[in-house]
Length: 441
Image 1: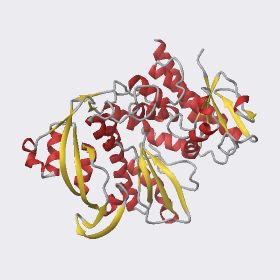
Image 2: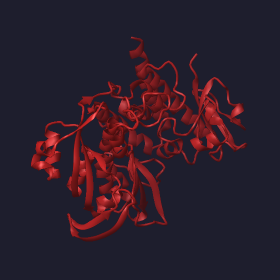
Image 3: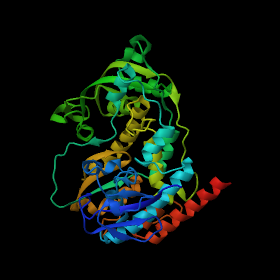
């Protein structure tokens, strides 16, 4: 019999708490508990605890206890996205149990899983659909290791005392659909391309990017970054970050970074060429292209469903995990490529957010975290509309943009902004019923 799903919220978000803890099973009734031993064993409990805290008390070895990142997006971020901060812990765990229970059921139907993965949904996806990691110590592994980077912490030049700190996030279904349909490099090997076989002998990075893009070459380059445009440089924050900003180099002031990047995939090289002065030291290409075979569930309700959005995020993120029981992110060329596509998309949005006065803290995995000063707070809905982003409903007093009923992003943002939890769950339930019917057919 498959485990049920439940949410267990500790009052201080650590397993040491003994009072004020609440739990609720999927489609069950909330109840208080004092320790993990009080939680029914036939249920997989998603807690609001960090994995390190669970490790410290030994609960990470308990197959019925999961950490707050089980669905990749942490529970505290879901609370922010759904605007649940003013709800009681009892109310929070009840709503989260409904949303995450629906997400877990959708994942099982979509992926054909017999059981809920123990270590996390992305880990379960990786076990079945993840790409093979090259052998440790191999040249392919070393290049992949240096090219991998799943998110970027930005250099911060300001610290606002009164600012809203929150994350914009890209439509999860749209991101998943795009990344799952994008061919990624194979991991069997990588071959160095001699300079005489490259356009302009490899001396012109722009020509190299254009050639690789037009000819669909799964290209990786070892680079030395001589300078990057100031804003992009601060947001990319390579290595140890900025040493100084000086001179009148590429596009004006030049940002000097201590680069520890070495290798990068073509999508990242493309951004660097547009924004800086880059010297290409070596060029290699992977052995062809591959696909995961995964696709998002095609239905008009899918991009409106908050629960299915969580599933979609785990689909694309899951194929960057090792195809084994560890659940860790693989050091592979395919992972580096997917991460580069994701981070460069986030970077482009981060540049826009920075330009209107928001301080970008970090970005990656379809999310851009900012500190938004009061002076530009009113621009949040408009920039979200223009950049096709979601913003959390925890932000009070914002004037929402005009709703277009035919646009699923508009509809879900409207439901979030109104905190219309009953309709959010109704959409989830309706999509789940469709998935159940289609799987039974």
